[in-house]
Image 1: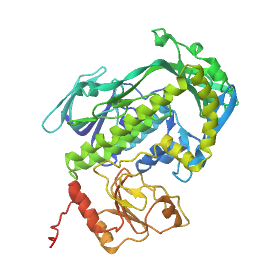
Image 2: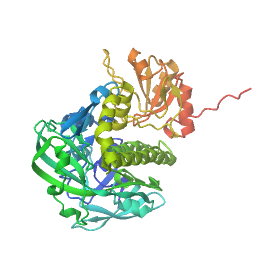
Image 3: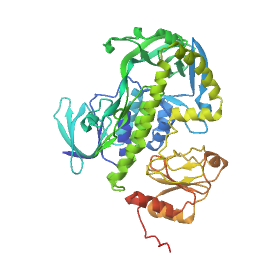
Length: 518
């Protein structure tokens, strides 16, 4: 029986990112998928700024950004006229190296991820399905069904269910999947179009209750339409592009010249009760599903993968106790519940049917959006929510301290490179913990980092660091996923010692007897 550290069921973006992050940390991974090849069509198109930030340590960010189309604007349309233009670049230029929504079709995204997996020495076992698994004293034993081949039995220390909304892993665990199903049928179409909206940007129609958004990915009118169909027929697969509301498209000033492919699907809004049970974990659509409003789904699954990967790697290597893995659910489930609730309310608003809803949607919403977006703090807040850069882990047991305006659990504030060329988001040589000091590190901190092999980065103090919320000469301990674990105004070695001792993190745990208090 082949044995692995982690068995990943499902080779969508979530599963592949998890497998790649584990492989880059020296963890032996097996990833299986029942499909014969990566998808040739895709629903997910938007790659948010936070995903690109998380891709940096994996060596993916610049390649993905170059392959997709950075989209710096969202346009709101009513009656064939653009009523509001929201500039993401203006909103996010001080917050992230990626102040835009990247339009990058999921099928191309998956092909890129698979190439990087193979380069890391991991081959996806395709036409292979997880049929069953049992937890044992030291891991999981799984039965795999191969198309055209014998069943296989493999062992792994942990199992990651990245196997979609109909997850076999979730059903086996019995963790529940509370929520509901939208009455609307969603469609996605790859089209060639013409008109004012065929300019390679994002366009949303507010004229009718038929939700439709156009995501352009070139300057010549090629793009993706995502919308809803109001149809009572039971046979969803029988619907065609002719069943789509062309009035909604006309409201975008868009004329479709050719449909390259068209697909329909139903959407749920659900979150599982638990992300972990024993040695099995749920990620991505296996853990949470919601409407496509806001382009959050795939990005949330990738965030799950990055969060879990470093924790699994630490436990497998013996650096940390198994209890570290409990923080995965605590950190990710609260965001998923909030996301499902937010996207549900947003989708309900844009699809509501009444004269009042029409008035609010077509008259008030565009005017309010333009006015509010003109206020800098509001503009940045909207961008943070859309880009997922607002996600934090303040309530996590891994988060501690405050220094300046930065709290433990925050996403590390980004500061653009100055004349010295220092980029505080530059990926370290390895996926690992690191300490940042904006100013000058004290000798005892340098000595502690040298002794423990901790990455220490010192940045010459600049006004931009103060504006970003950092305290001069303070110490900021960063987790391997780039979130701030500990903020210490005094930047002392003892603070690091105490943090890892309290966490019972074996690799850095040297709990010296503390002097008695007299």
